[in-house]
Length: 453
Image 1 (cartoon, one colour):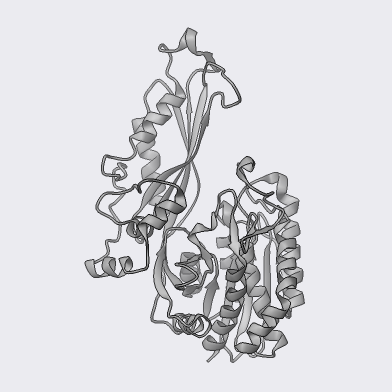
Image 2: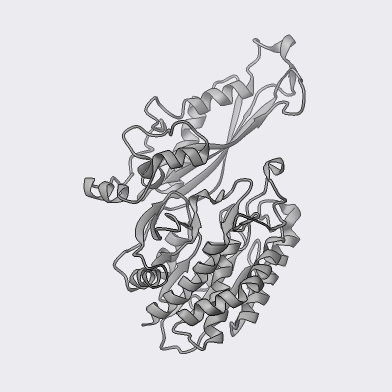
């Protein structure tokens, strides 16, 4: 691998320049105004896969944004790795909290600040550069297929149909995804568990127009007040979700499993310092690592209504809304949780308002095996490049495709991510370490070598 490291070091500036070009395209899939930018990003990824040496690359249309499919089949007898990732990004809002423009990559303290730098453009691009190196070195130990989508940040609505319609094209021996985080640059880790998701929107409507709060206040229900009260009732004093049936199917870990989970390096004081908080919060009886890895949650992601501009405007809003996400654990089904949430919200709504509940998207939780050849290949790759054995961890985020791959293709996934929890994913000032990017390329090349063996 010393020659691989030499190649990476000598091409570092070019790799970064190409990544910066990719990061400058505002591929915000949630915003229809960026539809052309999303497609432009897909075309960019297509070209870079071709330049790297993929023998066949195409844009495959879906009901939404296109999927970039590419492959390099060197020998049908060799194992095949299917790399999954996404080229779309989260909206950059609120813009005023960014210290540099979100779509103008800026390097500070060895980190690339830009929307998508870590999630997931930077991590996807590591795989493209790994392919380029293996082609250059004539060291293709595996066949490689790529499926890079443009709708992950809005729920991958068209991905299920695509996978079902292209099972032969997607045949492989393992899925490889880099869209998760390491414990730290001092201690590598491999994610073996992901939470599922149910993402909802609640709209509360009162009077047929905004009202003067002095004239009507106290006589007409205020939708913002009602919504706030409803949301507050969704947790009890122990931090548990109050929706009836919410915990019915939750998979409980054994004492031994919980102990193993908490053996991962974690400094609570550093955690609080990094977030600028005085104390952590959550479900009573569980540690921070357990709350974020093995317990289901319910959180408000956005709430609005009435006047939010500068200065004062004393109104009683006609409408108030909130977006709410529920992270789910193994055995919880997103459709079931969505139905339970909808039923409960409608049941607690007072007659003084009208309530509408909309389901946006969801996905199942997933647990990946730690005794497979692919997991061992990933372990050996980290040991070779990092000189340390990676620790299995559970990630609080969601990648619905993992459960879908298992169901439709019968394939397990290796979650080999190189980000850090402190990289501000989905937040202003998202960033990705240059060292993470470069050592990620090297580790991915090592994975292919060990899996091929």
